[in-house]
Length: 111
Length: 192
Image (tube, rainbow over all chains, first blue to last red; front, side, top):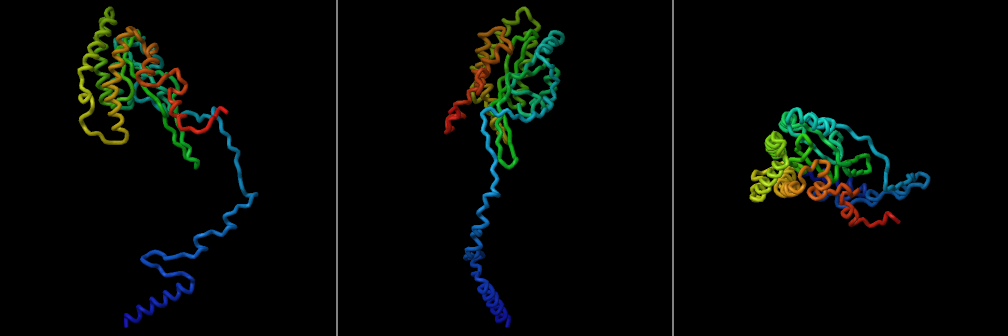
């Protein structure tokens, strides 16, 4: 009885799918799809000219627009503002001068 | 590096520190076109000079270092500097002797002795350790040789030679020597 009910249910399902023009799933994947599902109608692909937006493109070798540089704390070292001041204090303390050279600025985000 | 508490504390206690910019740093910005931009430095390089009170260079730490190696160098240079600075009348002779001794020590080193023996992990760590090794093994040797010939050099008088010959960034070149790489595969003639 159970077997009869199960086969009746499967038959009904197949019949319902066939009526919608679809093939049943095979191995968990749809065997085929209708063309209209894959392809979009041409009228939705073509944008009327009045709706096209174009923006002027400018290419400049020397772009002068610069974003403001973000300042950061230059580590936990207590720096003198100039090497001259560090040298002056070195004479008094007897400690050597440490001069750190870099490209960019130590208190900039990118240095 | 200067955010490292051990390094910053050591500098604050043992040196009179100042920093100077030798030029602006080139940066590159990737604009993904969706509002997302990523900016990175392209070719920055650094140098740490240890000098006497009159500004004469005693030694230089070139480029980037792994923090503990950087601290070791600072300690070594601080000690050497104090010995040199207390005998100010013999300063240049002592600096010259220091470079001769360091050069002999560097030449006696086998490269494997400079390279790290421990494994390193983490983003950028391998490159940093490799840079440290190269700086210690090769660049410092160059510096000792150059400073032996330029007694009394100051950071200001030495920086161009250091950046050009040791750090490979010509400060007089507006493109820092990168132009040939940037233009090598660029197909358009922007000048026409």
